[in-house]
Amino acid sequence: MSLIAGSYEKFIWGFKLRPLNPSPDSQSLTLTPLFSYPSHLSSITSVATAGSAAASGGTDDTVHLYDMSSATSLGSLHDHSATVTSLSFFTPPHLSFPLNLISADAEGSLCIYEADPFVLLKTLKPHRKAINDVALHPSGKLALTVGKDECLAMINLVRGKRSFYCRVAKEASLVSYDFSGEKFYMTMEEKVLVHEAEDAKLLCEFENSKRVLCIEPGENGILFTGGEDRSITAWDTNSGKVAYCIEDAHPTRVKGIVTLTSKAGAEVNEDPYLVASASSDGIIRVWDVRMAVTEKPNPLAEANTKSRLTCLAGSSLKSFKRPQVGKSVPEEKHDAET
Image (tube, rainbow, N blue to C red; front, side, top):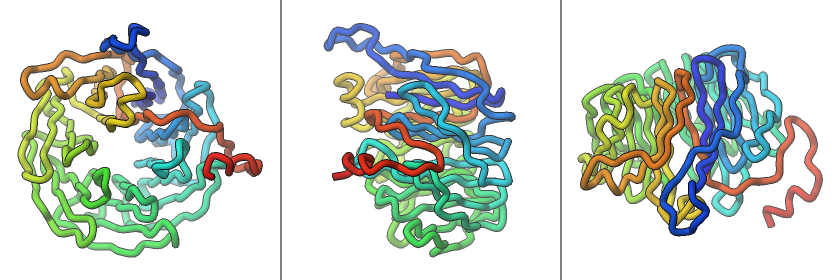
């Protein structure tokens, strides 16, 4: 598992989660630093990763690209004219490398890129004001966006057009699909709403004690939230109730959460219940969430970046052939898809 985090201090941080003991029976893990350097001219606002590809966006209006496997920079993208607010990779289930990168900014613009090589395919403006967050459907054909105009938009990524746009009750800061794509979640301060993806029907809603700053879907209808309450809460989205909670997971507010699926967890060890979290004081922790059902767990691994973290992303996919920025790709690239 690879983790990438961004900070207010312009630094990007890359980590690899590895077993501390090479023995297959070992449950001890460690976060090994891959790189850290000031990649942006100002604060980093969003990060995304898939396989060994990673991207970061900042208030300097740029998107920077990285190869996590070699800890190198792949270049940068300069198609935005405002703060980059959200980044998402699309990776088909049968591939170990992303096909597309989606980025959004504070002027309401959305950019669609081909990921290998990184070439801009389309720019559109689905919102009148800043886009707060973007969620990609597992099919890669649709995306949801929420913005400061208090609206929800659906983007047809195949045609590169907005297909749906409506006002919501309140400005939503976060949006996400579940693993199946049958539900989506919207966050409005302390409240999280669960909707059916097909017709946007409201299924349930739940309210946290304090403002929610990050959400991440888990397996079996679980949604993880973190925020100003400094805890990691697992909600059962079928009932709208708390399944379990890691209280005081961090000494300060939680700014990012990353979950692993069973398949992904098996690449680190035989434990499929790993969740990583990052807080604004610079600490990244990895948890076994099964322990939270019966007792307060201790972190399995921890790293202190000593910076003010703003975002966290993770990938457990295998490495893929290093892409290029805006250059042609040799024919051999298609061998992995057949």
